[in-house]
Structures are given as structure tokens and as C-alpha cells.
Amino acid sequence: MHPVKQYFLEDLEIGMRAEYERMVTEEMIESFAEVSGDYNPLHLDDEYARTTMFKGRIAHGMLSAAFISKIFGTVMPGKGSVYISQTLRFMAPVRIGDTVLTTVEVTAIDPVKKRVSFKSRCKVGATVVIDGDALILVPSRAQAAAA
Image (cartoon, rainbow, N blue to C red; front, side, top):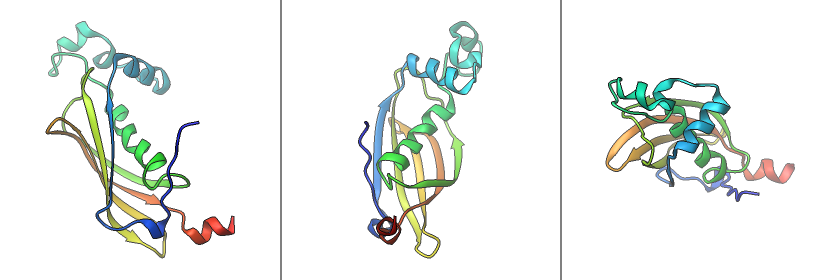
């Protein structure tokens, strides 16, 4: 089992942040293509990718975006949280060997609807590669006690 943290709605405050860092490998890109069915040669074929504006292979944008999901599902808020929505703006490519630093930050809390808004961002070095916002349904302590 993989460790999963849990923040209840009552634990969260505006400005709280969580991070996750991961290097993108060729194997990850190939596995993501297999799972998603996205076999675009831009991600998998060196020769083809060199002819594009990127001048080489790039990772699927949604592969890097999955790192945002990893934080929400296992770090903050973690256990029991449910995605409501996510916007993504893909700003720059991620390449094999790049280390992606993913950060989420609480921007608003709606205690009545039990929804928390987050800023979500992925960076490679100083370059923002994905910028977005998310809305997450977060369990409260009362819900957990009633279960």
C-alpha cells in the first residue's frame, strides 16, 4: 500500500500548500500512452518529434497534470477527497529527464458545500509548464465520525 494522508475540511486554511516532485522518464511516457491510448508520435517517435516545433519528444501534458491529482488524492486533502473540476493551461513542454515540481495551494474554502479551491502549478526549474485551478470536495470530521 502507498501512504495516503488526510486533511479534513476543518484542517485546511487559505494559503496552505503541498508539493510533489518527480522526474519524467521514457518508461513513464510509454506507460501513459498504453494506459491512455494516446500514441501521438510527438510523445513516442524521436524521428517524427524532431520535425515538430518542439524539436524532440515531449511528455503527454496530462501525464504532468496527473501529478496534481497525486497531490489531491494522497497528500492534501488526501483520503476521501473528490475532484469536482480542474482547469489546465499548458505553458511549456516537459521532456524526458525533466523533474516536475508540482504545487497546490488553498485559495478558498466553502464550509457549507465542503468544497476547497486550489491553485495548481507544475514547474520545470523556473519554467511554469502547467498552470490551473481546481475545486475539490473535502470530507469533514463530522462525516468521518458518522461513517
